[in-house]
Amino acid sequence: MKKILLVEDNPQYQLDWEKKLCRYEVVINQAFDLEGAQKILDRSDPFDLVVVDGCVPGYTYNTEPFIRELRQKSAMPIVTAAGCFKVQQLMMSAGCSHASRKDDVPDTVIRLLDLQLTQSSVS
Image (cartoon, rainbow, N blue to C red; front, top):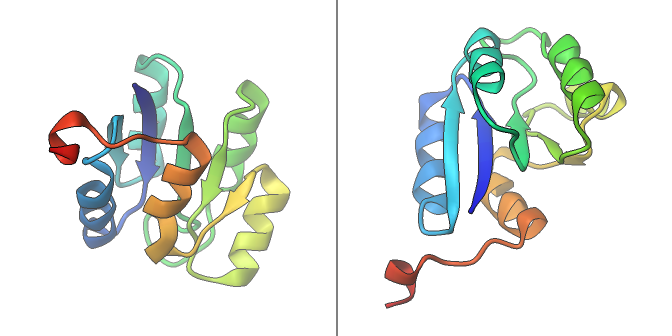
């Protein structure tokens, strides 16, 4: 089973993403700020993919150091889910491997990890 971390301060996006992804064979971890994300990363086995908003929390781009450190430690896909194109570009320069519109995050995760529906979702 694939393991992902969603780093997003907006609870509605977190809920929407979880609803769409929970039908797939994936373990979802959620963080609403960078400190929480770092704690999850420090105490967990490696992740298969991380989705990161550009401004967590708030409206100021603050994820660059987090992304750079994450990229130094792992070659896993890191998806920027920033709402602003300029912030997405900055995040790609910092080490994100993929960009996604917020509404497309579940589809991007499913595609990148080639996720399969759970048996209960197929029935």
